[in-house]
Length: 244
Picture: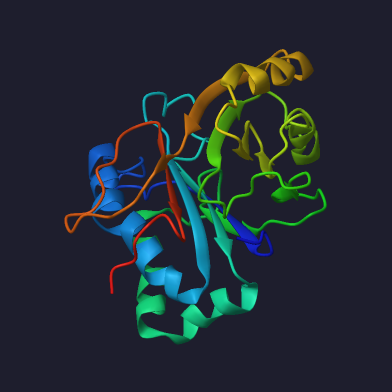
């Protein structure tokens, strides 16, 4: 498949309860697995979604790491124009509204957000294309990996991409205050150490909080997807069935 597509990145924090604290973790996981993750693939595949890479982290350190997201995703769409068509469709609008039933959008460090990935480094997510014939995010045969880095200083997305320069595949980085996320498409032999060693040399005070290799999803069961902490999944055209 050609790598001519648009990437959209998502950072999600779960909705707060009535007391202002993050809502129950297990209930959040159940809602993601039973509805949200399968619906993203089923609904948005009608609007140009080619690849979907959701990742769930953990609530273990919520008190100390409140700025880290609970769930993130990288999505490859055929075009921005096809994506926009979901806003004029009943199912698409319903899916869009479902975000606010699960995620927090109140201004602050836990404000969920999504942005298009740009080729140039800026304040949002940025992208490095694959080297010639290198793996990309809409490649069903690629290994897709996700790295969450905690850092006392704000890293720059372009610098985070630079530490993965030896990877021949496509890469996306998004850095916020207190953390950075690095998504990688690679051959199947990419190891955690090959990425984390140069990263920790560049930022000795940084800490690798999570390293996930996405699990390929071939079929979503009627009851949904079984989800757990620190897990990533790969939905992809040509790999994952779409229910009719």
